[in-house]
Length: 154
Image (cartoon, rainbow, N blue to C red):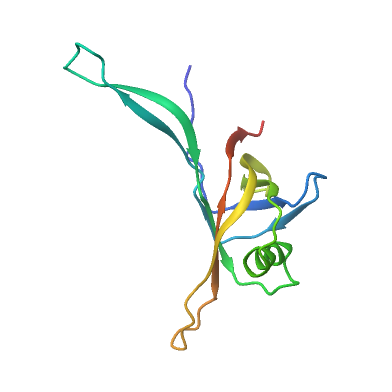
């Protein structure tokens, strides 16, 4: 039986933020998304009498941070910008219930998605202001999260 596997293209995606547990979500377009990773933390254990090697034991998973980049949007134009402004100017924020990153096919349908939960902002950066370039002003946000779930849509 021949198995046909095609490599997945990564340029067509959508990010959805659920701002509360009610399921209300906002679709937001980004230039890039990174940080969908998980790592197992380990602990070395030396066994008495065994000097040839050290055992390495898995402990817990560590995730992210999720790094999102997009063109700068004004407060009031984006619910996400309003949330970030409240967090970094007023020290008041509520963690996002869920962030879902969808990888889309040519028909704009989700092929796979990654879900991260209990998301809260770590940093919010504005790109360089440069009078010599006519480039889009990019904002970068780093978000902490507790869990990453990778799901194929059937």
